[in-house]
Length: 444
Image: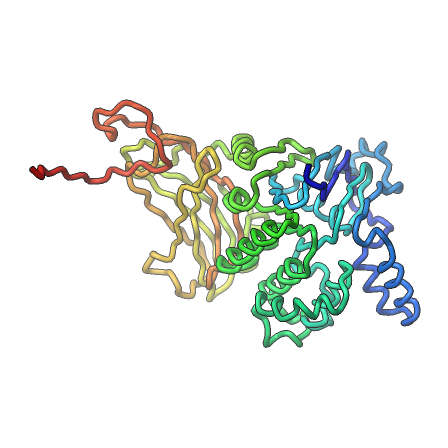
């Protein structure tokens, strides 16, 4: 049997809303260490070096948050009674809706916070990429932060020196290496943080949805690196709303629902069940309040609609009729160059197609004045097989920098119109079913 890399038993995390807890994280401790005498810092580092917990550690429950308090209205369980095991060399996907406890679980496994109940055993060094800037000191340069992060996970300077050039090449920030990271863009932060987490040889690599901050080329590069990591026998925990990436990278997935482990098994089955339970059952999704609408200070998503051939919102589309995907968004600042991407998934979680609005001629690549805009994607008839589909919308601005990604904003069903099959009445396989022209000729 393969060696266990992570064992989680009855893990729970209780938060008191509106209150601050009293414990300090490892990174907070390192920050405070900057203001202590050199002798004290040296003593702390030596204790970390010689402590067995630097490699194989168990996270015990914290006693200051009693489970009995869970019934009070200002208390919330971010995780409750979560148990699973991960073998060495496995790549595990972690999926679930926003607020389901995914990030809390990774923070516990990364020793950033402690559980309220239960325990987690992690065997080996952990490299984590949880949110932009985590583990970086803003006043230090990129170079200094590489060595700081290596020291946090217990590496020697010689080990970091050996991988340093490879980290810099992967992150593509060589000319900014000696600049304080507080001047880095979010993309530069993520490139360097991922390069450090993946290249400093952790036995367990933990990656959250933060990769979505990067551009498409960077995401592809990171997924390739994570595949290399698992190929080397190291363990990967990967949280993402991009179900295609989860399916491609992770043979096994777990799903969290309101802090509870709701599914654990082959990624194909877990993703299919997740989509069945969470996909919106209507063909449109509207955000009327711009304060809560997805987006940022540049762009806000206003609405998404599935329109049939008559231009009517419909969750039932015939195979012999075209339909449209309509995306409405608000430009919040003059000069923004926005765009949208529609990604369609079938009921099995397979990506059917993705379409980018860069073929639009009137507005693409041009600065937009403040205002509301509508982009429409035309889908031809007889393209899709009869099945259930869910739509994900990505809103981006110049150079495809993602502003927001909304999963399963609309759902619809394509029904078989009959005549597009001709006189064939058997089952129809495949994700798409285009009417392609055939020609037959006699050769002899």
